[in-house]
Image 1 (cartoon, helix red, strand yellow):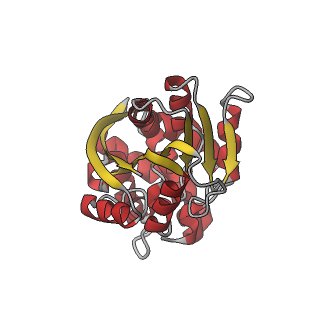
Image 2 (tube, one colour):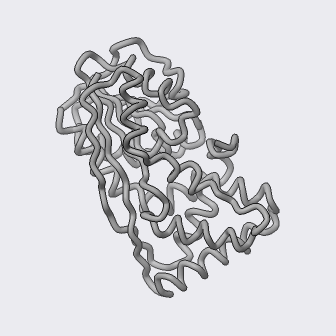
Image 3 (cartoon, one colour):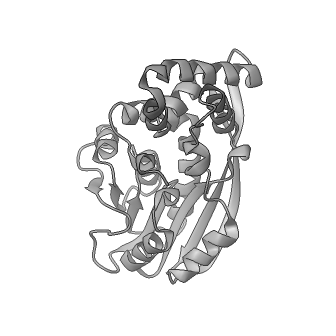
Length: 268
């Protein structure tokens, strides 16, 4: 993983929250929150909360629960906190590989599309297990391979044409680079988890125009860091090329594309 893959700063949190969250995260957040809420936990830790898509879904489905939402990037938490009533959620800047919580502090741990960013997956899973009470569950999701997530795939291929000597591969490498079910199961079991279950979750991503997914992906994710590292003056050109590719594939008006995630649950 490149160092910049974990950097959500500058204007990225704003674009991420405005465009990317409704594009791909909200429907998956409702699904994941339902899985967590089914056990009616009284205390929930969210890891890699980002701008709070899952946090809001958890709060809606577990109105009586204590929810602590953590993320490595403070700017993402700041944006998330703006969307929640004061005092409703406890926000905490935290590294998933070194959680600042006591052993057995939570009934449930949840993580939406964050495990892919853990530099050491087993260590991250061990931390999640450590802060869970006996019998508690770690529930999270990851994206399936990029070919099953069409907007991301089309944008990635478009950028390869813009930078043919050094294609930006953030989307394929990190968000869509951790989907091997057998590997995920082995790493959870190596961390001490049991009763691992996995389920494919299919959905449809919709936008009012081809430019929305292009901006969301090119400018609202760390893919922007890769583009600017190659040539910061070409960010708008790269975004335009991505929008053209989306339009060519899905049409020039409102667009929709397939998304696919994998929902995973494991017991401490």
